[in-house]
Image (cartoon, rainbow, N blue to C red; front, side, top):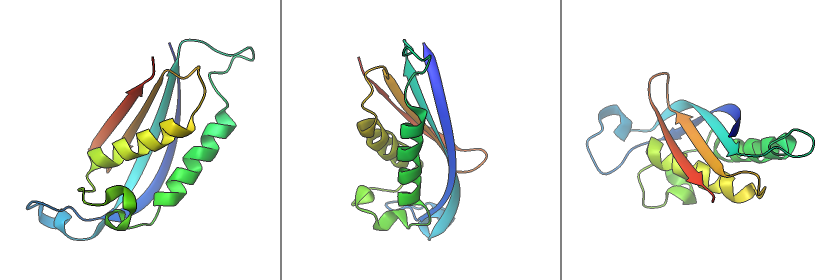
Amino acid sequence: MYTLALRREFIARHFLIGGDWGPENFPNSHHYVLELRLKGPELDEHGYLCDLVEVEKWLNEKVAYFSEKMLNEMPEFHEINPSLEHFARILCTSLAEQIKSTAITGVTVILWENTSAWASFEINRY
């Protein structure tokens, strides 16, 4: 199984809802590190898992969409807590929808909120 990974960093703001989360109940920003991992069992005739330029375009667009935004105000977070776990799922799902390559059998997003906390979400296509 081959794995291709790309990383991007961005800053976004949020505040948590529905509980006593201390300082996280108030607007704050995080320096997120997003790692996108694509998996597949076969390479194409050129020795590539997928078109890296195309995937980078989608990844850059997604990061730009969320960068410097208040997550609570975005439609993807309507009526849900903008937790790290939800954010990882939202990113993974939306990126997986754009990646149409049949060679890709797995898409994973690992999203770091700081140097010690991360969440991931994985989609397997079989």
